Image (tube, rainbow, N blue to C red; front, side, top):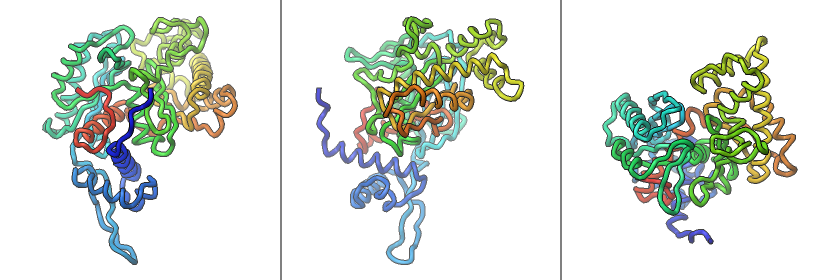
Length: 410
């Protein structure tokens, strides 16, 4: 089916987003610099900047006087326009990160979670608790918070309604109502892949290339795809489940029920399973929490007296990841692949050189030409950053400035 016809309002929305991205990227810039970096006409930039200043999104910070002509006004995001919160709900933790409207982190709160307790009421309570805590720590009144974004693993939006699905737990409409009632602020929900894609578009390599893939490595794994400058969502908002594509025929049992999925080899439980295959009695296998075990692996892999079983585990994981990325690169043909997620932050320096080598060896022909593989430049919690950015997008949409489709606004 053909896509919806773009209107003049959509085109103006794209221009505003281009200007916002340019201001965020530069921290401080001018109208002329925005025109050069975006390709928009000076007249369009002047109009858009005027609208953003009127809404309090962008401010003029200072005037610079050149040798000739009128003084030039420097522009920046208005960090004091309000606050947005991004909440990352993972299997092992719930973290709320507070941002100003220049998307600078100014506070956070986190609760560790028992990864085996997945009842929706417990998760709603944890979301509400970290949100209350981060707002209180900053001394904010709730009306100063422009919006809250919540990232829930495996969010699916189907033609029959909205549901949230993760292996072993499911949310229904009543659970979403409980979440809305507990948050009591403008709320958007999306899944981690769409959140990290948004973070890359606004604050990472998406500012410079229009085709990229961001791979999230944690308990689960997935691939957020940006093609021709737009996040790939798919028919039911579930595009990017690369972690459940096939890596090994009739291989390990994955928690999704299939055998041989990518996640079963490069997700945190899969990495620990590899360690168990190499050294069945290894003491790290007794760790209660995955994050503790993966952190201990990173420490054990360093130095001259590095643990040989851990080093071999990391080597095999790099091989699995390189092979899986080769298939992804062949299908999507991105200019850049970035790695993010808590496993990346913990093991990335050990994994990256070998993954690059295996990807180069296995990716077919032209798909590898000029491809860059790197750790994401979006630091901190990229899921929380991205979902907070989606909450900011929702605020801009409610103000009539952009027409971006917000996946689930409650």
